[in-house]
Image (cartoon, rainbow, N blue to C red; front, side, top):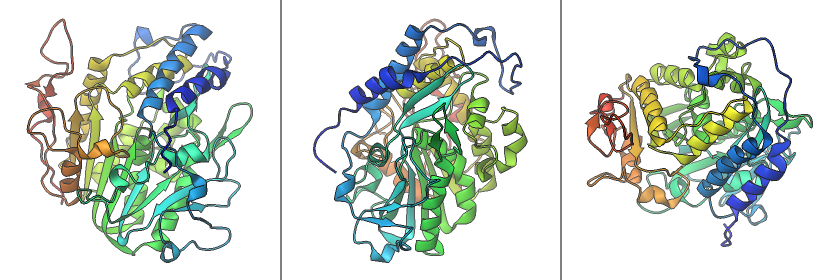
Length: 445
């Protein structure tokens, strides 16, 4: 890491205004997409002017920039290895190393050659981490570029040396081998397509596969501990990839941690977005292929299936009640589908509670709700001090440490137990805990 602070928010703000507003109107398609999501009158497409587009994307871009890791990873300062020249064996690595795939079909959105980070640790322990960094997607009416698209930025988002990759004594992952694919294609790690008229590569699926295949070749055939985690867009990647990775690897204890993105989309937009990423034919959506190809798939179905399929694995979600980035991206997605749709913190919280209730049917699922509007925790050192916001709350690091050992850790939240949406009739807020979610303690078979 270099010490200089990176002006991420300003950079992304400029990207949003100058570059991302290649947002191009698309021809109106007379054939309506049939989705499984409930439509309402407010979801009807409207004419969205350029000024409104810029405003919505600027908000999303600014908030994403605030949440990204403040330190820039210096690619030149790290040793590197090329799979086109050697096997890049972990035994030959003396420290954090960049592994280049050397495959023209594995690239960042801007065309940079792709690489993933390896921080060697014990060969019987693996932390596979999906960093965040926004998204670049094609809506029904316009295109949006709100993602990190270079190798430099995609690697920096992993927060190497901070949070879960920090070597401090109170980090339960300190001796794990840390593997993180750069997030630099904007496709939430599921993409297999090109974006826009310039056919920029979105090869997220193949990029991850290179990193996962390397880990399987280089680590023990049976892991004592296996953790899959992701933040923001990486949370979506974690939900999508968990089943495939949990099936491919052998382990004594495995844990999945989803940090700060639950996939709350405007109605009728999630399925088409996934389809436009070219994800339907990948193994990630093998059990939902026909639904995906019809434009009706959603990440919640995929994750719910995975939780049920793997009762011996601990699954968890970290969710800020009023996550400002999730709120901003909700509005940005709506714009690219020709809608003006805004939700506030209380509505975001209510909708994520509904999703939590679905997952909480499973004994092997727990969650950690955090007061406020912050976004992502695993990749920074606030991971060690963050609590739910209430007195007597465990720290996130302490809670996750018990989770990884499959201890009967309980779902955590700050506030009185109330119905979803709270008991207030006029002034809605997030200062409550949804009573249907508590108490709940982890039970892994």
